[in-house]
Image (cartoon, rainbow, N blue to C red; front, side, top):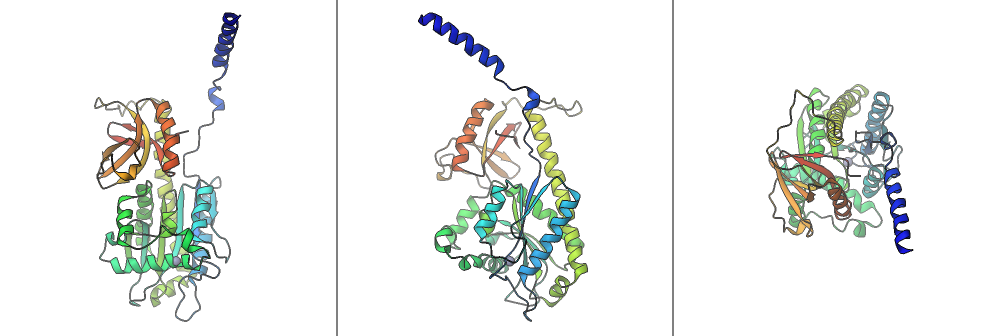
Length: 375
Ligand SMILES: [Zn+2]
């Protein structure tokens, strides 16, 4: 009886295993392209942001205006794309909520729009792009300017009712700066690529000075779990910049250049994920580009960190998870739970995600790390 039962079970099981896999065409490949973007008009409601000396122009109004025009350009050019705004009217939105809107939408890019101000001098002017990082590593000798921007843009947290509990990990202490130096966000490279694209297009106007890409400990960026930049379009405290910000033509010029940077970034982003997912689905490499193998096996794993700093696998940051360091250019990419077995590495990915929510699945081949779908 037992024998009979188990053989029936075996037959049933083998039938099941034959019929279980879904036909290839019904498994829809996930869309890894830049299909969702969140535009974040800085400030709003009780938080006006910076205000012109004559009290006639508010940062919150300009950021909304620029964001709406920018969103309209993207929607027009890419009707299939999801373009969200953290606010589309004059309301107060906590910094946390802004990042959460982007995470909930599974956005591939978060763009926070702001206008600068300087308490030091009316002469300071121009455009600056920021990514998350320690404030004292700007390309220019602008440490003090940087700290001003961070303080001002973060000060909104004190307008939130429960800021002391919500932002208890945020501070400007030296320890926090060191922490930022270490914990460079897993999306640092992509954030930098977009920031650099915007900065390079801003050379075409409307601002006279371009500060390039700088780093700062911005609370809104710190909470974003995707490539994220904060853009400061001109200084409200500089009369020439203020005149530009009040001119419809100059604003149109600004949006043109911002949109051109977006198009450039999206096209190279989409190309890279399409190539990666094609490689991951077993498509043969083009004959003109034979794959070069250095004899090391192909590994899969979960990238949890990219950092210029070499860290021991015993580093506390890795929380005891087995981690492999792969040096690519001048960055170390830290790959958790690496395995030659893709299925096993995917199980590892599910685990690692619980500890590092912004980690992503990768393939390591010939010293290169490429992103792959981990589902
Ligand atoms: Zn601002």
